[in-house]
Each structure stands twice: as structure tokens, then as C-alpha cells.
Image (cartoon, rainbow, N blue to C red; front, side, top):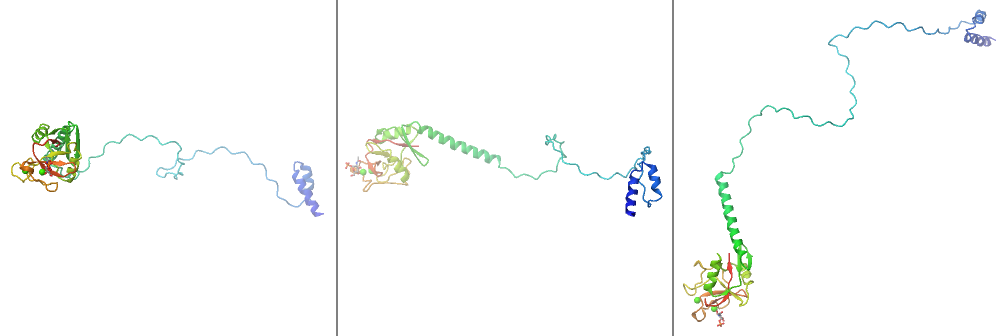
Length: 243
Ligand code: GN1
Ligand code: CA
Ligand code: CA
């Protein structure tokens, strides 16, 4: 019965807008907390606060998020800085005289080589071996005319100074299968020298040569086999010059 009474009182409280019912049952309900009233209206705003005191900045804010725009163009060049300290002394260069000397020597060498090459290009055939060129216009003549021909061309009659040169020279042989070389024993029989009267530093005499056949052979030929033979200077053979 007491439980039922409690429920009834609770129902009466909920329908408090019926004050008579609430009053009639008030004397017989147990004490219960009242329902809160509705909140009151806000009061009027207070007065503005005082400014903060200088020298006491507020707390630092949080770091902002990175920007999302593209990188801008480089800024203008800054102004020149102060002049720095004096640098160390540089290495000494080549003396001017040495540079001049080297250049002069180079020009001289190149000029000489160009002169040689231009002469070579004036011949019908030529072969190079080392720095030497053997040249020919297909002339067949005696030794005297061979010398004149080569001299007129600004060259010398061919004289191989080593095996390589000898091979290249005889490879230019044609009919009559031999060519004069610049070696004679005109001055002293049996002593062959070059056109500057210097002893030969390379020879390729055939077996039993030089034999001064019939005491009439003071000039020399290189035969197609590569061997050398002394012959009369009046013989007519191929003429090859060297540059
Ligand atoms: C040649 O061809 P012959 O025998 O007359 C040559 C000589 C050689 C000789 C060797 C102009 O004389 O120089 O010593 O063969 N003459 C000529 O047998 O080439
Ligand atoms: Ca001789
Ligand atoms: Ca001979």
C-alpha cells in the first residue's frame, strides 16, 4: 500500500500544474526534493576589463601549418659585402721569353713540315715511311740527271737509312726494276758515301757487291729484291727522290 502511495505522489508531482491536487495530497506524501525552477534571464554585460600590463606578453601561440603555395622566385642579389683580406701570392708563370721561344719553334717546325708536304703533293706518286717521303714522277735517267731532277724539286736522291725505308723504297720500283740511291764511291774507290760525303750508316749490298765491275761502277742502285749493287753512273734506271 505504501509503494502504491509513493507512485501516486510521484504522478501528482509530475502534474504539478494542478495545484489543488498537489495541495490535497501534500499532507499524506513523504518529503521529496522539489523540481528545479526555470533558469533566470542573463544579466547585463559587465564593464570592459583593464588593459594588460606592458612587459608581460601573453603565451606564445602554436606553430601554424605549412603553407601550400609554390615556392616564389629568387630574390634580388644582395649588396656586395666588405672587401676580404688579400689572397696569397700566386705561382710564378713561365717566363715570357720561354713561351715565345716555344711558339717560335712550333711555328718553325710546322712551317717546315707544311713545305715538305706541299712538295710531296707535286709528285705523281709518293710513299711515307717514318717522317720521310719517297716521291717519283716515273722518270728513268742516268745518275747525273737523277740528281738534277731531285735537286730541282727541292729534294735529294733517295737513300734508305734503315730496313723499313729500304723496303718502302724498292716497293716503288718499276721496270727497269732498279733505282738509283744517293751513294757513290767517286771520290775514293770502294768507299761509298752519301751525297754529303758522309759514310753510310746503313747498307744492303747484294752478295759479292760492290764489285766495281770493269772498274766502271761508282754509283749505286737498289734492286727490286731490296739488295744493293754498284753500277756505272751512266746506267739509266728509275729515279726516286726523298723529302
Ligand atoms: C751486272 O750484267 P753484267 O754481268 O754485265 C751488273 C753488275 C753486277 C753484275 C753481277 C749494269 O753486270 O753491277 O756486279 O751483274 N751490271 C749492271 O753479276 O747492273
Ligand atoms: Ca767503284
Ligand atoms: Ca756491281
